[in-house]
Amino acid sequence: MPEAPESPAPGPGTRRPGGRTARTRAAVRDAVLAGLVEHGYPGLTVEYVAEHSGVHKTTLYRRWGSLEGLLADALDLAGEDNWTPPDTGSLEGDLRALAREVVASFTDPVTSVSGSAIIAAAFQSRQAADALSAYYEERFKRCEPLVQRAVERGELPAAREGGIDAGALSRAACAPLFFRLFITREPVDERTADQAAAAAVAAAHAGVFTPARDEERVASASGAKETGTHTQP
Amino acid sequence: MPEAPESPAPGPGTRRPGGRTARTRAAVRDAVLAGLVEHGYPGLTVEYVAEHSGVHKTTLYRRWGSLEGLLADALDLAGEDNWTPPDTGSLEGDLRALAREVVASFTDPVTSVSGSAIIAAAFQSRQAADALSAYYEERFKRCEPLVQRAVERGELPAAREGGIDAGALSRAACAPLFFRLFITREPVDERTADQAAAAAVAAAHAGVFTPARDEERVASASGAKETGTHTQP
Image 1 (tube, rainbow over the protein chains, first blue to last red):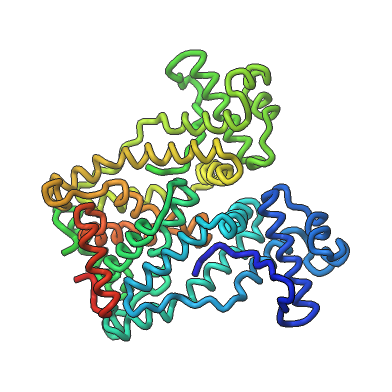
Image 2 (image 1 turned 90 degrees about the vertical axis):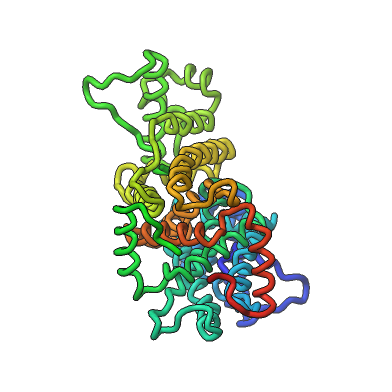
Protein backbone atom coordinates (compact mmCIF):
# COMPACT_ATOMS: atom_id res chain seq x y z
CA MET A 1 0.00 0.00 0.00
CA PRO A 2 0.90 3.63 0.14
CA GLU A 3 3.87 2.77 2.26
CA ALA A 4 7.23 4.36 2.80
CA PRO A 5 9.30 3.50 -0.26
CA GLU A 6 12.02 1.26 1.06
CA SER A 7 15.67 1.08 0.25
CA PRO A 8 16.06 -2.67 -0.18
CA ALA A 9 19.74 -3.29 0.36
CA PRO A 10 20.25 -6.70 -1.23
CA GLY A 11 22.37 -9.17 0.69
CA PRO A 12 25.32 -11.01 -0.82
CA GLY A 13 24.27 -13.25 -3.69
CA THR A 14 21.03 -11.36 -4.29
CA ARG A 15 20.54 -10.91 -8.01
CA ARG A 16 18.50 -8.11 -9.46
CA PRO A 17 16.48 -8.81 -12.61
CA GLY A 18 17.23 -6.88 -15.76
CA GLY A 19 21.00 -7.06 -15.94
CA ARG A 20 23.50 -4.27 -15.76
CA THR A 21 21.23 -1.29 -16.49
CA ALA A 22 18.71 -2.39 -13.87
CA ARG A 23 21.54 -2.98 -11.37
CA THR A 24 22.93 0.49 -12.02
CA ARG A 25 19.50 2.07 -11.66
CA ALA A 26 18.90 0.22 -8.40
CA ALA A 27 22.34 1.18 -7.05
CA VAL A 28 21.64 4.81 -7.90
CA ARG A 29 18.20 4.60 -6.27
CA ASP A 30 19.73 3.12 -3.11
CA ALA A 31 22.31 5.91 -3.01
CA VAL A 32 19.62 8.57 -3.48
CA LEU A 33 17.54 7.14 -0.62
CA ALA A 34 20.61 6.77 1.61
CA GLY A 35 21.50 10.41 0.88
CA LEU A 36 17.98 11.57 1.66
CA VAL A 37 18.04 9.69 4.93
CA GLU A 38 21.46 11.03 5.84
CA HIS A 39 21.16 14.64 4.70
CA GLY A 40 17.57 15.35 3.62
CA TYR A 41 16.77 16.87 0.25
CA PRO A 42 18.52 20.19 0.84
CA GLY A 43 21.76 18.34 1.64
CA LEU A 44 21.59 15.72 -1.12
CA THR A 45 24.18 16.17 -3.87
CA VAL A 46 25.02 14.41 -7.14
CA GLU A 47 28.52 13.92 -5.67
CA TYR A 48 27.03 11.92 -2.80
CA VAL A 49 25.02 9.75 -5.19
CA ALA A 50 28.09 9.16 -7.37
CA GLU A 51 30.22 8.21 -4.39
CA HIS A 52 27.65 5.86 -2.88
CA SER A 53 26.45 4.22 -6.10
CA GLY A 54 29.83 3.83 -7.75
CA VAL A 55 28.37 5.45 -10.88
CA HIS A 56 30.37 8.34 -12.32
CA LYS A 57 28.96 11.85 -11.94
CA THR A 58 29.07 12.41 -15.71
CA THR A 59 26.93 9.32 -16.23
CA LEU A 60 24.48 10.47 -13.58
CA TYR A 61 24.06 13.86 -15.24
CA ARG A 62 23.78 12.29 -18.71
CA ARG A 63 21.15 9.71 -17.77
CA TRP A 64 19.20 11.50 -15.03
CA GLY A 65 19.72 15.14 -15.96
CA SER A 66 19.78 16.53 -12.44
CA LEU A 67 19.35 15.78 -8.76
CA GLU A 68 15.62 16.19 -9.22
CA GLY A 69 15.67 13.63 -12.01
CA LEU A 70 17.55 11.22 -9.75
CA LEU A 71 15.01 11.64 -6.99
CA ALA A 72 12.04 11.24 -9.34
CA ASP A 73 13.51 8.06 -10.81
CA ALA A 74 14.18 6.62 -7.34
CA LEU A 75 10.50 7.08 -6.61
CA ASP A 76 9.44 5.62 -9.96
CA LEU A 77 11.54 2.58 -9.17
CA ALA A 78 10.03 2.30 -5.67
CA GLY A 79 6.65 2.05 -7.41
CA GLU A 80 7.80 -0.88 -9.55
CA ASP A 81 7.22 -3.52 -6.89
CA ASN A 82 4.51 -6.14 -6.86
CA TRP A 83 2.55 -4.86 -3.89
CA THR A 84 -1.12 -5.77 -3.86
CA PRO A 85 -3.75 -4.59 -1.37
CA PRO A 86 -4.76 -6.81 1.58
CA ASP A 87 -7.42 -9.49 0.98
CA THR A 88 -8.92 -10.50 4.32
CA GLY A 89 -12.46 -11.38 3.25
CA SER A 90 -14.23 -8.18 4.34
CA LEU A 91 -14.09 -4.52 3.38
CA GLU A 92 -13.38 -3.36 6.90
CA GLY A 93 -10.76 -6.07 7.37
CA ASP A 94 -9.04 -5.05 4.13
CA LEU A 95 -9.07 -1.33 4.92
CA ARG A 96 -7.90 -1.98 8.44
CA ALA A 97 -4.98 -4.02 7.12
CA LEU A 98 -4.21 -1.27 4.59
CA ALA A 99 -4.27 1.43 7.28
CA ARG A 100 -2.10 -0.74 9.54
CA GLU A 101 0.44 -1.08 6.71
CA VAL A 102 0.70 2.73 6.65
CA VAL A 103 1.27 2.79 10.40
CA ALA A 104 3.81 -0.06 10.28
CA SER A 105 5.68 1.49 7.38
CA PHE A 106 5.95 4.96 8.90
CA THR A 107 6.72 3.84 12.42
CA ASP A 108 9.41 1.38 11.34
CA PRO A 109 12.77 3.02 12.09
CA VAL A 110 14.26 1.98 8.73
CA THR A 111 11.49 2.47 6.14
CA SER A 112 9.97 5.52 7.81
CA VAL A 113 13.04 7.69 7.35
CA SER A 114 13.34 7.37 3.58
CA GLY A 115 9.56 7.58 3.20
CA SER A 116 9.28 10.82 5.08
CA ALA A 117 12.43 12.19 3.42
CA ILE A 118 10.69 11.81 0.05
CA ILE A 119 7.51 13.47 1.33
CA ALA A 120 9.72 16.30 2.62
CA ALA A 121 11.59 16.58 -0.70
CA ALA A 122 8.27 17.11 -2.50
CA PHE A 123 7.96 20.45 -0.68
CA GLN A 124 11.19 21.60 -2.27
CA SER A 125 11.16 20.13 -5.73
CA ARG A 126 8.32 20.26 -8.25
CA GLN A 127 9.70 17.16 -9.99
CA ALA A 128 9.81 15.24 -6.70
CA ALA A 129 6.24 16.40 -5.96
CA ASP A 130 5.06 15.16 -9.35
CA ALA A 131 6.82 11.83 -8.85
CA LEU A 132 5.31 11.44 -5.37
CA SER A 133 1.87 12.26 -6.72
CA ALA A 134 2.25 9.69 -9.51
CA TYR A 135 3.51 7.12 -6.98
CA TYR A 136 0.42 7.48 -4.77
CA GLU A 137 -1.98 7.66 -7.70
CA GLU A 138 -0.65 4.32 -8.91
CA ARG A 139 -0.72 2.83 -5.38
CA PHE A 140 -4.36 3.78 -4.88
CA LYS A 141 -5.20 2.48 -8.35
CA ARG A 142 -3.90 -0.87 -7.13
CA CYS A 143 -6.48 -0.69 -4.31
CA GLU A 144 -9.37 -0.84 -6.78
CA PRO A 145 -9.64 -4.66 -6.65
CA LEU A 146 -10.07 -4.38 -2.86
CA VAL A 147 -13.13 -2.21 -3.43
CA GLN A 148 -14.33 -4.35 -6.34
CA ARG A 149 -14.26 -7.45 -4.12
CA ALA A 150 -16.44 -5.63 -1.57
CA VAL A 151 -18.90 -4.76 -4.35
CA GLU A 152 -18.96 -8.43 -5.40
CA ARG A 153 -19.62 -9.50 -1.80
CA GLY A 154 -22.53 -7.05 -1.68
CA GLU A 155 -20.80 -4.86 0.92
CA LEU A 156 -20.76 -1.82 -1.36
CA PRO A 157 -23.19 -0.59 -4.03
CA ALA A 158 -22.72 -1.99 -7.53
CA ALA A 159 -22.65 0.32 -10.56
CA ARG A 160 -26.45 -0.04 -11.05
CA GLU A 161 -26.94 1.19 -7.48
CA GLY A 162 -24.82 4.26 -8.04
CA GLY A 163 -21.37 2.64 -7.68
CA ILE A 164 -18.56 3.70 -5.40
CA ASP A 165 -15.56 6.01 -5.82
CA ALA A 166 -12.83 3.47 -5.02
CA GLY A 167 -10.10 6.09 -4.94
CA ALA A 168 -11.92 8.31 -2.45
CA LEU A 169 -12.71 5.33 -0.21
CA SER A 170 -9.18 3.93 -0.02
CA ARG A 171 -7.70 7.41 0.43
CA ALA A 172 -10.16 8.01 3.29
CA ALA A 173 -8.82 4.97 5.15
CA CYS A 174 -5.24 6.29 4.98
CA ALA A 175 -5.66 10.08 5.21
CA PRO A 176 -6.08 10.39 9.01
CA LEU A 177 -2.79 8.52 9.50
CA PHE A 178 -0.74 10.64 7.13
CA PHE A 179 -2.41 13.73 8.63
CA ARG A 180 -1.29 12.79 12.14
CA LEU A 181 2.15 11.66 10.98
CA PHE A 182 3.09 14.67 8.86
CA ILE A 183 0.80 17.59 9.70
CA THR A 184 -0.34 17.51 13.32
CA ARG A 185 2.60 15.23 14.17
CA GLU A 186 0.75 13.10 16.67
CA PRO A 187 1.44 9.44 17.42
CA VAL A 188 -0.36 6.77 15.36
CA ASP A 189 -0.91 3.13 16.24
CA GLU A 190 -3.10 0.19 15.27
CA ARG A 191 -6.02 1.76 17.12
CA THR A 192 -5.73 4.94 15.00
CA ALA A 193 -5.50 2.74 11.91
CA ASP A 194 -8.60 0.74 12.86
CA GLN A 195 -10.54 3.93 13.57
CA ALA A 196 -9.57 5.38 10.17
CA ALA A 197 -10.70 2.17 8.45
CA ALA A 198 -13.97 2.06 10.39
CA ALA A 199 -14.66 5.71 9.55
CA ALA A 200 -14.07 5.07 5.83
CA VAL A 201 -16.39 2.05 5.87
CA ALA A 202 -19.12 3.98 7.72
CA ALA A 203 -18.87 6.84 5.19
CA ALA A 204 -19.04 4.37 2.29
CA HIS A 205 -22.16 2.75 3.73
CA ALA A 206 -23.76 6.18 4.23
CA GLY A 207 -23.29 6.84 0.50
CA VAL A 208 -20.60 9.50 0.85
CA PHE A 209 -18.42 7.89 -1.84
CA THR A 210 -21.32 6.94 -4.11
CA PRO A 211 -21.04 9.40 -7.02
CA ALA A 212 -24.67 9.11 -8.11
CA ARG A 213 -25.92 9.93 -4.65
CA ASP A 214 -23.65 12.90 -4.33
CA GLU A 215 -26.08 15.57 -5.53
CA GLU A 216 -28.81 14.09 -3.39
CA ARG A 217 -26.57 14.10 -0.33
CA VAL A 218 -25.54 17.71 -0.83
CA ALA A 219 -29.20 18.69 -1.18
CA SER A 220 -30.19 16.79 1.96
CA ALA A 221 -27.29 18.27 3.90
CA SER A 222 -28.30 21.79 2.83
CA GLY A 223 -31.78 21.06 4.14
CA ALA A 224 -30.25 19.90 7.41
CA LYS A 225 -28.19 23.06 7.57
CA GLU A 226 -31.38 25.12 7.59
CA THR A 227 -33.37 22.98 9.97
CA GLY A 228 -30.63 21.59 12.17
CA THR A 229 -31.88 18.03 11.81
CA HIS A 230 -29.82 14.91 11.33
CA THR A 231 -28.30 14.34 7.94
CA GLN A 232 -27.37 10.72 8.64
CA PRO A 233 -29.41 7.89 10.05
CA MET B 1 -9.44 26.64 11.94
CA PRO B 2 -6.41 24.65 11.14
CA GLU B 3 -5.58 27.12 8.46
CA ALA B 4 -2.36 28.34 6.96
CA PRO B 5 -0.88 30.68 9.57
CA GLU B 6 -1.05 34.04 7.91
CA SER B 7 1.37 36.88 7.87
CA PRO B 8 -1.00 39.72 8.65
CA ALA B 9 0.75 42.79 7.36
CA PRO B 10 -1.11 45.58 9.15
CA GLY B 11 -2.10 48.55 7.03
CA PRO B 12 -1.27 52.15 7.93
CA GLY B 13 -2.83 53.21 11.19
CA THR B 14 -3.26 49.61 12.39
CA ARG B 15 -2.13 49.37 15.99
CA ARG B 16 -0.94 46.15 17.52
CA PRO B 17 -1.81 45.51 21.12
CA GLY B 18 0.95 45.12 23.66
CA GLY B 19 3.28 47.97 22.81
CA ARG B 20 6.88 47.80 21.74
CA THR B 21 7.68 44.20 22.66
CA ALA B 22 4.59 42.90 20.90
CA ARG B 23 5.41 45.05 17.86
CA THR B 24 8.96 43.69 17.75
CA ARG B 25 7.73 40.13 18.09
CA ALA B 26 5.21 40.64 15.29
CA ALA B 27 7.83 42.26 13.04
CA VAL B 28 10.15 39.32 13.66
CA ARG B 29 7.34 36.86 12.98
CA ASP B 30 6.50 38.65 9.70
CA ALA B 31 10.16 38.53 8.67
CA VAL B 32 10.39 34.81 9.50
CA LEU B 33 7.29 34.03 7.42
CA ALA B 34 8.50 36.23 4.56
CA GLY B 35 11.85 34.42 4.64
CA LEU B 36 10.16 31.02 4.64
CA VAL B 37 8.04 32.02 1.69
CA GLU B 38 11.03 33.41 -0.19
CA HIS B 39 13.67 30.79 0.59
CA GLY B 40 12.06 27.86 2.44
CA TYR B 41 13.45 26.61 5.72
CA PRO B 42 16.81 25.44 4.37
CA GLY B 43 17.46 28.95 3.00
CA LEU B 44 16.18 30.96 5.97
CA THR B 45 18.87 32.77 7.95
CA VAL B 46 18.99 34.94 11.07
CA GLU B 47 20.60 37.60 8.84
CA TYR B 48 17.48 37.64 6.65
CA VAL B 49 15.21 37.98 9.69
CA ALA B 50 17.37 40.80 11.09
CA GLU B 51 17.36 42.67 7.80
CA HIS B 52 13.61 42.33 7.21
CA SER B 53 12.46 42.96 10.79
CA GLY B 54 14.83 45.81 11.59
CA VAL B 55 15.79 43.95 14.79
CA HIS B 56 19.50 43.52 15.40
CA LYS B 57 20.97 40.02 14.99
CA THR B 58 22.38 40.10 18.54
CA THR B 59 18.89 40.81 19.90
CA LEU B 60 17.43 37.98 17.82
CA TYR B 61 19.96 35.49 19.18
CA ARG B 62 19.52 36.76 22.74
CA ARG B 63 15.72 36.60 22.74
CA TRP B 64 15.03 33.67 20.41
CA GLY B 65 18.20 31.60 20.79
CA SER B 66 18.34 30.27 17.23
CA LEU B 67 16.61 30.13 13.88
CA GLU B 68 14.55 27.25 15.20
CA GLY B 69 13.46 29.37 18.14
CA LEU B 70 12.44 32.15 15.77
CA LEU B 71 10.37 29.78 13.69
CA ALA B 72 8.71 28.20 16.73
CA ASP B 73 7.78 31.61 18.12
CA ALA B 74 6.37 32.73 14.76
CA LEU B 75 4.06 29.74 14.92
CA ASP B 76 3.17 30.36 18.57
CA LEU B 77 2.21 33.88 17.62
CA ALA B 78 0.16 32.66 14.65
CA GLY B 79 -1.85 30.65 17.18
CA GLU B 80 -2.62 33.74 19.26
CA ASP B 81 -5.51 34.90 17.12
CA ASN B 82 -9.19 34.85 18.03
CA TRP B 83 -10.32 32.24 15.53
CA THR B 84 -13.40 30.28 16.50
CA PRO B 85 -14.91 27.35 14.62
CA PRO B 86 -17.88 27.88 12.28
CA ASP B 87 -21.39 27.95 13.77
CA THR B 88 -23.93 27.23 11.04
CA GLY B 89 -26.64 25.47 13.04
CA SER B 90 -25.82 21.86 12.11
CA LEU B 91 -22.90 19.50 12.61
CA GLU B 92 -22.47 18.82 8.92
CA GLY B 93 -22.77 22.52 8.10
CA ASP B 94 -20.11 23.36 10.69
CA LEU B 95 -17.70 20.64 9.54
CA ARG B 96 -18.24 21.56 5.92
CA ALA B 97 -17.43 25.20 6.69
CA LEU B 98 -14.36 24.06 8.66
CA ALA B 99 -13.15 21.86 5.80
CA ARG B 100 -13.79 24.66 3.32
CA GLU B 101 -11.65 26.98 5.45
CA VAL B 102 -8.77 24.52 5.04
CA VAL B 103 -9.27 24.48 1.29
CA ALA B 104 -9.58 28.28 1.07
CA SER B 105 -6.52 28.81 3.24
CA PHE B 106 -4.26 26.41 1.34
CA THR B 107 -5.43 27.37 -2.13
CA ASP B 108 -5.11 31.12 -1.48
CA PRO B 109 -1.91 32.26 -3.21
CA VAL B 110 -0.82 34.38 -0.23
CA THR B 111 -1.69 32.36 2.90
CA SER B 112 -0.97 28.97 1.33
CA VAL B 113 2.73 29.67 0.78
CA SER B 114 3.61 30.49 4.40
CA GLY B 115 1.36 27.71 5.66
CA SER B 116 2.99 25.04 3.58
CA ALA B 117 6.46 26.47 4.26
CA ILE B 118 5.87 25.87 7.98
CA ILE B 119 4.62 22.33 7.36
CA ALA B 120 7.76 21.77 5.28
CA ALA B 121 10.04 23.25 7.96
CA ALA B 122 8.65 20.71 10.45
CA PHE B 123 10.36 17.97 8.43
CA GLN B 124 13.71 19.61 9.05
CA SER B 125 13.50 20.98 12.55
CA ARG B 126 12.33 19.17 15.66
CA GLN B 127 11.50 22.50 17.31
CA ALA B 128 9.40 23.56 14.31
CA ALA B 129 7.67 20.15 14.36
CA ASP B 130 6.84 20.55 18.06
CA ALA B 131 5.53 24.07 17.48
CA LEU B 132 3.39 22.91 14.55
CA SER B 133 2.03 20.04 16.61
CA ALA B 134 1.14 22.42 19.47
CA TYR B 135 -0.45 24.83 16.99
CA TYR B 136 -2.79 22.18 15.59
CA GLU B 137 -3.52 20.68 18.98
CA GLU B 138 -4.71 24.07 20.17
CA ARG B 139 -6.68 24.71 16.95
CA PHE B 140 -8.55 21.42 17.27
CA LYS B 141 -9.16 22.11 20.95
CA ARG B 142 -10.96 25.24 19.82
CA CYS B 143 -13.24 23.00 17.72
CA GLU B 144 -14.66 21.31 20.83
CA PRO B 145 -17.57 23.80 21.18
CA LEU B 146 -18.59 22.90 17.61
CA VAL B 147 -18.95 19.27 18.69
CA GLN B 148 -20.55 20.24 22.01
CA ARG B 149 -23.23 22.23 20.18
CA ALA B 150 -24.03 19.15 18.06
CA VAL B 151 -24.37 17.09 21.27
CA GLU B 152 -26.72 19.73 22.68
CA ARG B 153 -28.81 19.65 19.48
CA GLY B 154 -29.05 15.87 19.83
CA GLU B 155 -27.00 15.25 16.67
CA LEU B 156 -24.26 13.39 18.53
CA PRO B 157 -24.33 11.09 21.58
CA ALA B 158 -24.16 12.78 24.99
CA ALA B 159 -21.74 11.52 27.64
CA ARG B 160 -24.41 9.17 29.10
CA GLU B 161 -24.73 7.57 25.65
CA GLY B 162 -21.00 6.99 25.32
CA GLY B 163 -19.97 10.51 24.30
CA ILE B 164 -17.91 11.52 21.30
CA ASP B 165 -14.19 12.05 20.72
CA ALA B 166 -14.37 15.68 19.54
CA GLY B 167 -10.72 15.75 18.52
CA ALA B 168 -10.97 12.66 16.33
CA LEU B 169 -14.15 13.95 14.69
CA SER B 170 -12.86 17.40 13.78
CA ARG B 171 -9.52 15.95 12.62
CA ALA B 172 -11.44 13.50 10.41
CA ALA B 173 -13.16 16.38 8.60
CA CYS B 174 -9.80 18.00 7.74
CA ALA B 175 -7.46 15.02 7.22
CA PRO B 176 -8.46 14.11 3.64
CA LEU B 177 -7.72 17.69 2.55
CA PHE B 178 -4.26 17.88 4.11
CA PHE B 179 -3.57 14.39 2.76
CA ARG B 180 -4.35 15.47 -0.82
CA LEU B 181 -2.57 18.81 -0.42
CA PHE B 182 0.71 17.59 1.07
CA ILE B 183 1.02 13.83 0.53
CA THR B 184 -0.68 12.72 -2.68
CA ARG B 185 -0.54 16.30 -3.99
CA GLU B 186 -3.90 16.23 -5.70
CA PRO B 187 -6.21 19.21 -6.21
CA VAL B 188 -8.77 20.02 -3.51
CA ASP B 189 -11.92 22.09 -3.84
CA GLU B 190 -15.22 22.71 -2.07
CA ARG B 191 -16.51 19.36 -3.28
CA THR B 192 -13.56 17.57 -1.67
CA ALA B 193 -14.19 19.58 1.50
CA ASP B 194 -17.89 18.70 1.55
CA GLN B 195 -17.10 15.02 1.01
CA ALA B 196 -14.60 15.04 3.90
CA ALA B 197 -17.18 16.68 6.18
CA ALA B 198 -19.93 14.23 5.13
CA ALA B 199 -17.58 11.28 5.73
CA ALA B 200 -16.74 12.54 9.22
CA VAL B 201 -20.42 13.01 10.08
CA ALA B 202 -21.32 9.54 8.78
CA ALA B 203 -18.51 7.99 10.83
CA ALA B 204 -19.65 9.89 13.93
CA HIS B 205 -23.24 8.66 13.48
CA ALA B 206 -21.99 5.10 13.04
CA GLY B 207 -20.30 5.37 16.45
CA VAL B 208 -16.71 5.34 15.17
CA PHE B 209 -15.74 8.29 17.39
CA THR B 210 -17.76 7.15 20.41
CA PRO B 211 -15.14 5.95 22.89
CA ALA B 212 -17.50 3.71 24.88
CA ARG B 213 -18.56 1.87 21.75
CA ASP B 214 -15.02 1.35 20.62
CA GLU B 215 -14.46 -2.09 22.10
CA GLU B 216 -17.83 -3.21 20.83
CA ARG B 217 -17.06 -2.00 17.33
CA VAL B 218 -13.70 -3.71 17.24
CA ALA B 219 -15.36 -6.94 18.39
CA SER B 220 -18.09 -6.63 15.76
CA ALA B 221 -15.57 -5.84 13.07
CA SER B 222 -13.49 -8.88 14.02
CA GLY B 223 -16.61 -10.96 13.66
CA ALA B 224 -17.18 -9.47 10.23
CA LYS B 225 -13.62 -10.26 9.28
CA GLU B 226 -14.30 -13.93 9.89
CA THR B 227 -17.70 -14.11 8.30
CA GLY B 228 -17.40 -11.48 5.61
CA THR B 229 -20.69 -9.83 6.61
CA HIS B 230 -21.43 -6.12 6.88
CA THR B 231 -19.98 -4.29 9.82
CA GLN B 232 -22.08 -1.17 9.32
CA PRO B 233 -25.81 -0.74 8.76
